[in-house]
Image (cartoon, rainbow, N blue to C red; front, side):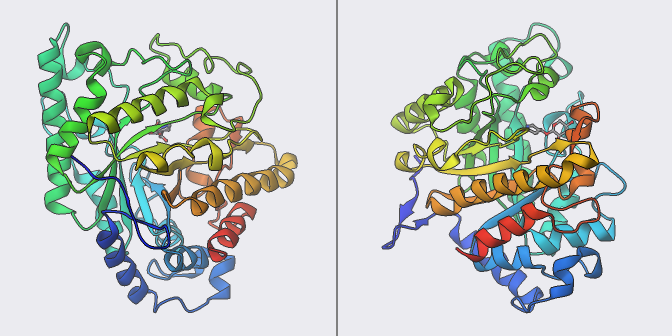
Length: 409
Ligand code: XIL
């Protein structure tokens, strides 16, 4: 059985990953000469070597806060490009793999694994004293390529156990100093609070979620294990993209659908209520789930108020984090100035909500800089520029907003 967070005398949670957090912090502090100010670096990440610590990273390290960015090696101009590397290592103390740890990228239908792309990200993280958030073991995969037609529940369970133990075993044995946490199950629920008909759910049944947590705990007991999902009601492009296989999400299936309301408490979202009920049940039955990830893809001004939306998590003895923050703007130069200010307000509020809650210690943005975002691809080019760093890796208003929050911590 897992214990929830332990609270110290001033109410700060002493998470089980504390020692894992401190060692990389010391390493990055040594690499960065413990945070000398560099005003040139503040203007432009390109002027700095990959080991230089820029203001955002210095502020995150000093605040003992995990400020991360999803990285990728699947584009030639991403990891390995000196400007990208400098921006990633200079501004963030945590990273994750945007796609490289997902089942279809790791495991061929013949059962062989290719860890090389994800290992390159883990090697980079280690070299720069960064921690990693693993993403993801069980998503919406159609399992036919691995299990063929009509697999039994037992086939599905054996496959899940093998996949989870192979992936976590590789990183437990080779990168125990890098990974602190992992998304075990992602996006299991529809907006109406019912379970999606994913391949895993269809082959195994509704208990696929708790089985995944049990197998992950069995493979790597020290890891903080997450259930991850998105809640923004207007996330329409997302729904139509990921539910294209005939698995509709009523609130998210077409552009314009869904009410324009900000999510304030968990009660404003049937999906959130379903996840909360699952978490309460898992805590009561000691299913080894430790934490809840809120993706935070926010394609409009109606940003959820995470201070209240996630307030139920800490009292359950669980952690929460923001796993995939981005807030896209229309791809229209004339709209950018005001959109970038709204975006900065969103980033400020989201990071502040996490900083203010002892149960939250991590915010990860979904990409290193605007040139690497998934949004243009998702929206046929209509939306983009959703991140804190611009196309040239310079700070946008959102970066300065995050900096202010971290410096005020
Ligand atoms: C996205 C990647 O950014 C894209 O490159 C890929 O084509 C699809 O997946 N929720 C998640 C992430 O949990 O894994 C998704 O990442 C974005 C939404």
